[in-house]
Length: 146
Image (cartoon, rainbow, N blue to C red):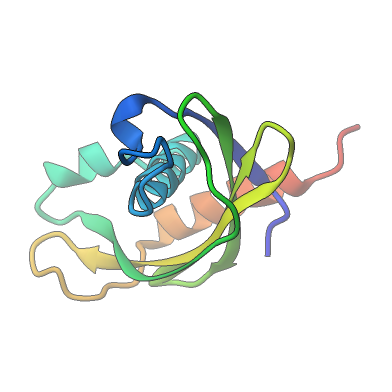
């Protein structure tokens, strides 16, 4: 799939940590969600617009796999690196790695989101226009610079 990657910065605040100043494990999922949302916005996919459209479609988390490699601490600067690993008509698989400022892998994850009908929440193939727009934008991002 696409080699295009998006980078999303995260600074660790007190509220992100446990009593020992270590990032609480579930917060990595929040950072990954923010990074995916930011990437989808950059791909011109507006979840907000779909919320008001009764015929619209939404993306919902279908599965998550996460592996913690090392601890992040209070005041660390992290980057969530996101790549579209697989694009199908009714789902997208994202590969997401969280790295620290030294480039060390902190957390790695894979998230599959499914496309569902806003009205029924049943799985639904992406509308052609949306699917083609995502494909086109990923292809453009992968195209060599002239």
